[in-house]
Length: 112
Image (cartoon, rainbow, N blue to C red; front, top):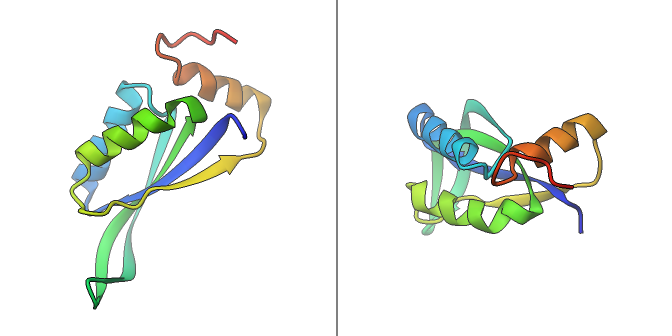
């Protein structure tokens, strides 16, 4: 299992996307959150095809922080069934991954 992960989710608007991104960074559950959009999502929900404007969040974190990140995402998310997709990171710039690890440490100190 890899140490790092990217988490994908969507939010309905800029304000809620910014609120979630800021909370994850302040609480050190993520090192970086990119907010993309607006975009249009098309999906089936309760037997109806829906089209909705959303913001895509790309969340960079560590495996150690995933459980707490998921709890916090569910607390702050307005959707009944929020998107939560986890993509393992198999590699990357050593310097960037060190920074990512450091920024998600509870005290902000890389202890490895």
